[in-house]
Length: 133
Image (cartoon, rainbow, N blue to C red; front, side, top):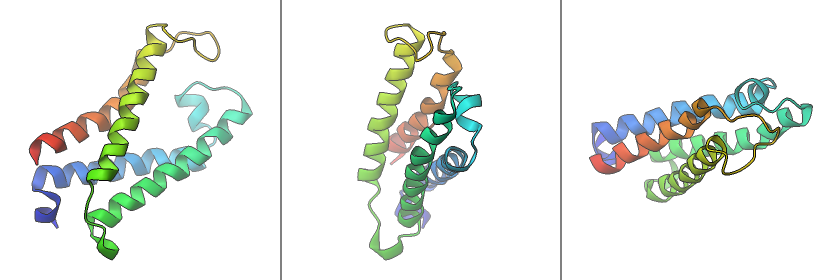
């Protein structure tokens, strides 16, 4: 399994992305206060906004698990990681645009810089995985 992942470092990156995505996916889907306390949306509609995103992330994590264990012939992770990489680049660019006030926030408050670290963590893991293959 480690050899099919490309070595020990890509394997550990794959496992980290499973745990990281699983944590955020489950919190988005089932924790009603996660969106309010971590992203800053105070309305009740915001708690329901995170549910589809959470289930989407859980689906992505299930695909990561299927590719890690090569269930049903899923062995190529390049396409999945490329889509995730593009999404994380766009999320990071959006976060920095909000922090540097290029775009306006939903409530007019300042966007904290710490919010930009969340998409950067898996982005760095994907870059490490790419260069270690």
